[in-house]
Image (cartoon, rainbow, N blue to C red; front, side, top):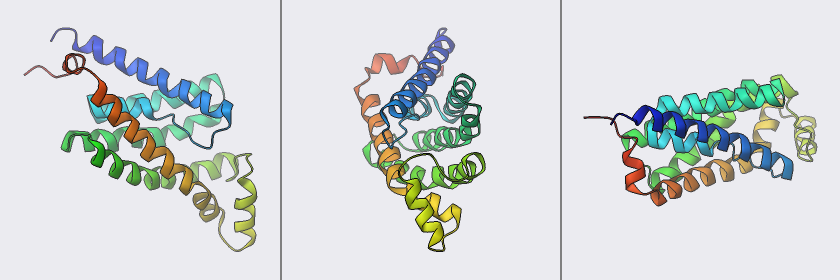
Length: 186
């Protein structure tokens, strides 16, 4: 299909915009979820790991250049989402069960990548009420890594599983004619 590159490039651009807009909305509303990886999940599940990685990286880089340079290192988290979802979707159809399992795995993988970045960039604190939990855990003998990691487990489980399920349902709702535009030529 001659226009595949155009469809892929356009879809990736929309996915980057989706990540940025959802990130801004959740941040503005003070929601303890991120939802800034939905575009990455969609692009990786439909197009594969490399486009997912690129969408993830560009989302955080652009957000960092617009708002805060300290957001840029978190592109590693978004890139990991693109890689993992892309590989899962390549191996298995990205249905509900793989989406839930992938969401659970991403919850902990993203925490393992994002926690050290958060500690380096923000000292392990994020300026929310949950900082009191982090400080009390540290005073109770936990390391800043353990305290920051534990604080984010619940929100990350909800965020990553929810994002993967939403991504799966959105893909199922897309017309096959639309998805055919992304298939590689045989």
